[in-house]
Length: 113
Image (cartoon, rainbow, N blue to C red; front, side):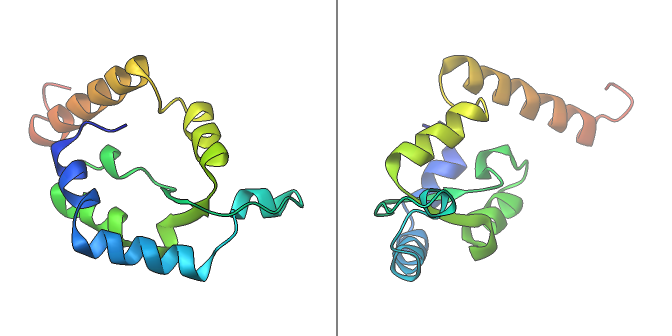
């Protein structure tokens, strides 16, 4: 689970909850399961390009609400995608945070990076 304050704010916003419902209504079956011929109900909406990896709040909002960045998934597929991408667990969070710090340093202090 992401700990980013901006992400937490966005994921609890009414706009996200409405969009999430729209995506699950439009795609009631898991899009990953369908690729391999399985039929599972989609219960979660996945951000293909992770919101918490964006640097600015503006970029996070764009990723959060872009319907082309969303995928309807069952819980198992959602966990699998995050695990395979290395975006779950304490080490992944630390790695993600270190990467964000490096991006900020590069952006605001280009001579330091």
